[in-house]
Length: 320
Length: 300
Image 1 (cartoon, each protein chain N blue to C red):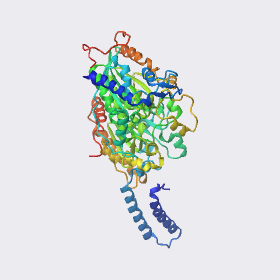
Image 2 (image 1 turned 30 degrees about the horizontal axis):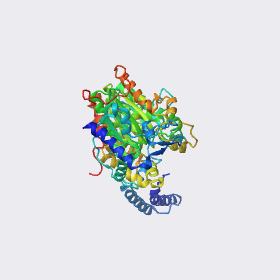
Image 3 (image 1 turned 30 degrees about the vertical axis):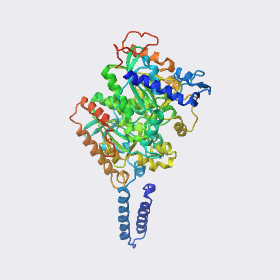
Image 4 (image 1 turned 135 degrees about the vertical axis):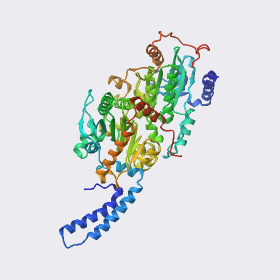
């Protein structure tokens, strides 16, 4: 069953009607409804195109958080072979909100790291909704060190509402773990590339996304704070998330203009969840292209270029 | 000239401004409620003489007390573009900036200076919580990069006093990008083999804690400072239970292995002198109230 977002309600009605007609026709063979159903399909398509042609920033947040959107695990399963998960931070535990390990992209061995949100109640709880604890960042640091040691490129897939705000996480040094992970991203002498596949939530995302190349899916978002959080602080009203989403400039398109995202990966009409295969293939092609871009750079060049890229960020605003 | 503009003029101005605001002569300690005379507080570095509570201190006042003879040279910070996102909540961002500039008399939320402490040349940077919550935007990023570059150029340690609610939301993603930018600054110092000492003051939270404020060679905090990634209210809403007494305060972090030391503000200068001199392999310090460095050893 398709999960519709609130703004997709009119679409749900049309698609529902078409589905109803077809169900009736299946039970009653002399009914000829195909023309009518097709007309509804056309109408639904037009509406979908219309809705997605001008998604507001808040609607983009909703699409980025869509429960059926492909998650890290789906990308790893489809795009990599020989994926061998590696667990633990060697200090406290293993954080299931962060997946990571060795894998092959084509023939090439790489280290892949990403946030996983989970697909149903049980896996969401197990994955802590993609909100990592210090152990998750420390696992990532360890994997990046391994990649650096053995000369393997690092691919990170970002999809997190943010780092987990919990008692234990704070006691075990959430901020230190994030700071060290960002620091490690800046140190590794191997290609480091990131795809923001859904939500890029604040520091929890930066810790993985301080990369040579950052790509964002068309309807993904990346922000210093969630629109709800920003609204409750600056508007003193968390229901003003639409206004906050607008002001924060968190869409892939705005971030591309600001130079934070190097490329925007187009999504199938209606979002990645409507045609998962196509979306996943597009991400795969983008990863390959970004790695190819960095192929001829040695370790020092990669580190220098990464630093330079971040130091020069912010030299242009959106006004121009 | 620098001595006049950095030291004499502000002192004269502060004398006059104090005269103009007699209603501010007395203030109440947030810790114990004792009424304190302003001279009594400022002579004690804004630490309550009765209960030892550490009140807010501006970067400028901190530097007057920190540097030998109260003399320091401000280091220019490259100006970032203003209002890059044309951000507007209930107020326009430039209007919020103007209000903060008016109320603090400062241009932005960080001050960077070069000077000597116990005849030890250092670079210091301090964040101003009274300026838009000390928030980290592009200016703060530029300030920390400028401080690190100056430290590397002159071969001096960097001492950074942090105080911030976190990243500046009005600069959106560009404020978030200060996390990697300031981390690059810290790496410059590390590669040059120069000490980077962080003094965490109340409060240091959010993206600031999760970047430059947690990457020091030595991590010191002022007593009872709130230091965290997610604030206590957010955590209470998430886990729906009451947090333990002193949670996320300096002493709690010390107990959990996240800090090297918790140090009273009145002892801080002495500790910083000892620390920087040992790390720089310099001879033991000479103690006492040192006057400003003479012309033969200019604090560059």
